[in-house]
Length: 297
Image (cartoon, rainbow, N blue to C red; front, side, top):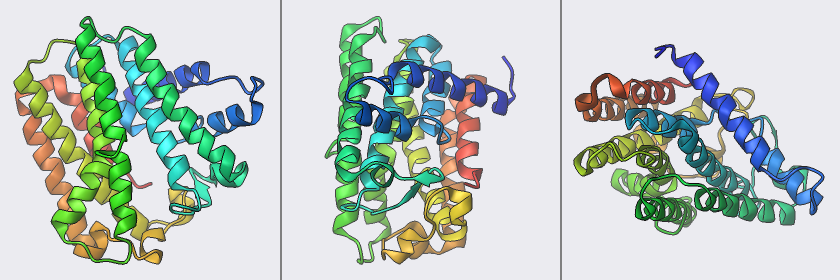
């Protein structure tokens, strides 16, 4: 097994792109405009961090990579749907995503709404149509986990909490609560779904892996807040400084940039400590975590 992270990540990013390209409806399939918008919103963009976490967890659990590809794609479809909806005027009202006009700008608001809906349902179609576990009950639990991570007790609930608190200074525990749901829930789902594509890990090991994913999910958001404050729009591929402009509570607004960076490093340390018992089998999870913490855009 090569230890070169860039080669490993590139191969899996290509695998996800290829799978999504094949599984998304063709551009000439009716309704054409909706299917064009779905492909526009998902393909040729993003670092695919969540799929990489799923693949890394799958390697840890010795899972069949064809199974992991399916769950990684499902998680990425949920992530893509959330971005399409978050960018809409009724939410964050953003005009740039991954270096190109957002879906509602390139198409229209109604199409963007339907695009998000369709990407979400396609994710669950993928999970339901393929054998992802040798145990049917485990596969049902996997579908439930992605649903919970996406809904009012996960990502959507975190976004609602965020919208409810614009202009209000949150405490650090309140901010953590928001991002455990808004950002962290889907990252935890990516890790756990990848691991559940095999039955090698026991309950105690899966619990530790979930704790690792919680740390990584929070670290991801801390770094995101720092980048929003420091990086340019051209570098980010999305509008920089939107959090401050909209008076949103962030780790930077509460802690400052230096302390926010220190928190991200502490979360990375905590995540790494959890992985100790897995030894070299966890190398990809460590590498993806390092990529998350040190990313520049």
